[in-house]
Image (tube, rainbow, N blue to C red; front, side, top):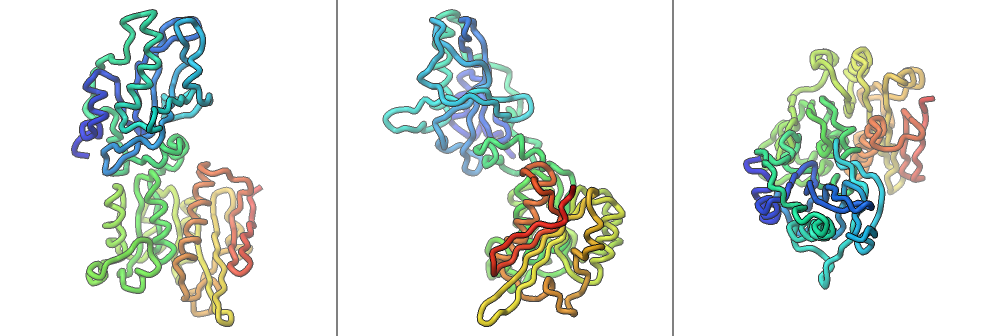
Length: 398
């Protein structure tokens, strides 16, 4: 980022310029050093916290009037709690080293919302500071701290702009579970490209893309987004086409314009996870190599067939981890054909919504493995059948 977010946003810059201790991190704005009175009428200091609403890394109107607080519950100068702002009490980890213990609700009238973050944060700071100043007139949130160069502006993030989706949902700490170092996607066809779309929006450091094909017109109809005619005319390698798109959002998209093979897998070195979105004769050797290197992976596949004047289909997700691998071979959970044998998972019919579903199921399973989602069944094989809308889990790890 060329300039810290605070310098680009008038409301945040005003807070800092007036002496508030402002920090921007992981999609939150934090004002530290806010004085308040505890139940014993002693002056304490806490931190006000708000999710950020941004447009191109400049603040827009806050999406909620509610504000989080890290500290004890504030009291009036007579020792009674400030009830008019009471909202909820619960421990919410914002990021390492900062946990909110309360949320406050001070809805401005008559609009019901704050126009900017200066109005919002200074209002809450005044509400908390007022009683403290009756005891200690020097107690103020305007502490004029030494301001660092980036002011906590997520300079080490893989993303080129802040992930405000996680902060708005208050799941930033949970999202950190997805901070793997090196994930590979083998194959960028219909399903693989949707896997990339979902994984690119997680904090994985490096996403390695492998595909030796060119992005052509038929690919545009089963890939995320919308390619222009000019882009199709370029006939870019798939990996470069998708690298161009997702590099707008984040760093760490590594393109390999080649079809993956067991030898390439061996040369890649340590991998944290692999999404296997390919078919063909090399697939068996690739799976064996991944197992040899003790790499966890998910293999996807789907078969769509004509049934009368409609389509039917099955979407498959096979997971292989250190905890369970034998099902791949003993129960033949991954088909190792090149498509010539007519296996139901290798048919040529591809439909974007089923590709997207296949990718979503695979990424959800991956996130379960990492503890992002609750994993009750630990299934390592699942199928979704279109006709009956059935999702079946099998090969459950004990």
